[in-house]
Image (cartoon, rainbow, N blue to C red; front, top):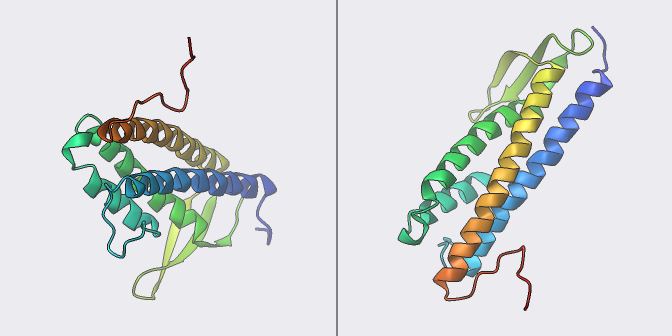
Length: 172
């Protein structure tokens, strides 16, 4: 056992953080876009700030009949994101207290839960596990980016605006 975790594991944890920030940004962008269009209802008159509130707000908004063509796919993407969030949170908000092996082994993670008690989670964390989670978060971002594009096109059509999308069209 060493006092310092292997640098390659730390690097992959860093990639998880970077990719998660991108994913949260596209969720925030979707909420802000819907809010600006007047389709996302907010309690205090501002777009939601907390991640889980953003997810809930998107779910409520997607029940609008205008989004019938993407609501099922969007809901499935949000379900996947919430599952990734739980796994990511265990890693990013846990305290790694033991490292065994250079790139894999039983890592002890301590998390504080809602009632203020500590829970010890003995989880197997290897470089492959971290890389897999990082890749899943990256794919979730790409999926959500595409869904945001489609959501924006629906909103523009709903507002009676011509949709040329971010890709643009050539003038003739």
